[in-house]
Image 1 (cartoon, protein in one colour):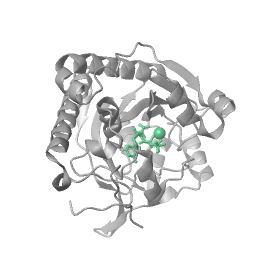
Image 2: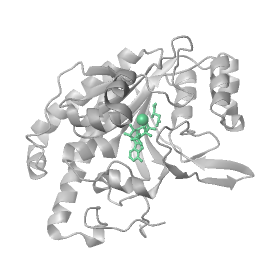
Image 3: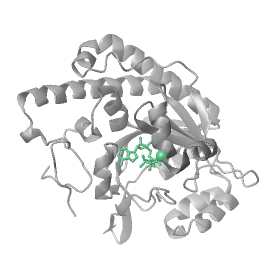
Length: 321
Ligand code: ATP
Ligand code: ASP
Ligand code: MG
């Protein structure tokens, strides 16, 4: 099924008018600035910058996914083994930060063939990038504080150095320097208050970035089996939506195994992380991933985040480039 490209969707480069090319160039400047600012902050804070991988046997299962948004998973055979395109580098992060790089980040390419109706959300593309990071022995609180400082620093400097671009994009007056710490909400309370549409309701109602914790997710996020609470966190931007997901992680073999089995995930694809956790080589870590197109889309005030991409990846629509 293909998506009908209407005027509300971002166009490919060769279809842009002069004025639209100027806007596209302005967004590229904001993207360049954002990448420079965030990567410099992580390097300054002692993180190693790892280069990404695109094909591996183990990738993010993206399951259980309450939104069940993936239409197709890409698997190919190379050298007699089945590999998958990177959905996220979460498994790589757990192993790499446990063994060799206690503080790491990666500008990671994520391929998620979202269902075509996700084209309409304005927040989904089928190829995107995360600034994905992981820290050995860190708590959730430490990560949340690090992210709050990074976002505050980014917005403060953007307003100084990218004033002209933000004025052109009409966001100079709307994107405020956020006060920290950000407010924290428990997902259970939001569900009780707003029902199943809590994500959209809370995004519309908030005028500052907020954290939402305790979200049931994939096996790698830490879950307290007694209280049934999840030690994880999503960052939501005002009038927009989710821009980061992260968590304290599971590291104990018995819990990882139990959750993989509970989620009915193919153990074969997670052999290494299971083996390493059995040997006690997976360490407690915490981390998260910032969706870069979403972050820059919010700063730039785009209607659809594919506008931040030189080669738009709109669900349901395939272009020659
Ligand atoms: P959503 O619920 O919005 O579909 P998700 O919770 O499934 O997203 P995660 O698996 O948490 O996404 O991915 C980490 C981050 O990557 C998200 O917080 C978001 O910023 C970004 N992201 C996820 N899916 C997409 C997508 N299809 N297009 C662009 N960015 C995405
Ligand atoms: N990057 C996310 C995390 O660190 C994982 C994901 O992409 O879902 O938790
Ligand atoms: Mg998420």
